[in-house]
Amino acid sequence: MSDKYINNNFSEITFGRRSVRKYDANVKISREEMLEMIQEATTAPSSVNLQPWRFVVVESQAEKEKLQPLIRFNTLQNETSSAMILIFGDRECYDLGEEIYSQAVIAGKMPEEVKQKQLDAIIPHYKNFSKEEMSNVIRIDSSLAAMQLMLVARARGYETNPIGGFEADQLAEAFDLDKERYEPVMIVSIGKAVEEGYPSVRLDAEKITTFK
Image 1 (cartoon, helix red, strand yellow):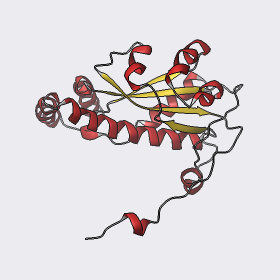
Image 2 (image 1 turned 135 degrees about the vertical axis):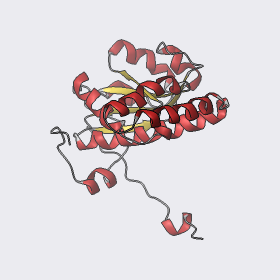
Image 3 (image 1 turned 180 degrees about the vertical axis):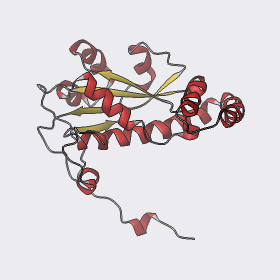
Image 4 (image 1 turned 120 degrees about the vertical axis):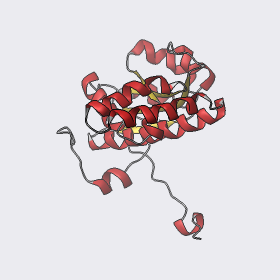
């Protein structure tokens, strides 16, 4: 557990979360802490542990200005946040399969023969996915990491806003990524809140749940 958590109350972190749109523009998050939060976020589950999430942290004024015209109705977050975290899914995430599974072997979490058997089955399967099938996988996995990132941020005293309104066809290339390989999933603004997010309501569980 990080010694930088200022709040480790599960209920408050989870159920007190709001989407915050205005932050203290004078508060900057160090790259060290940002990497720590991303590291913690990536303990989220992913399909066959291929971890397809990729992060671009937009923190400089120049890069924020580049982002500004691409985020439609979410410019206040861009102007005031410590950073805008662009989360992409890597359609060729299987390229890191060997590295990921080798780390598991070194850590004593998987025998070498199991690693090879798994990779021999997984890699060809992933390579045969259609674009739509791969998109579904990387979007689900990257969204799990995004949710965990938002909760980790709250534990450290920051607030966030998940953003889906952006020019998806332009985002990757604007930040020097291959748009055929990297699919934008979400943008998460992060910083110290100066305004509370609006409370919202949810449908009753009985209305949206069926037991069989």
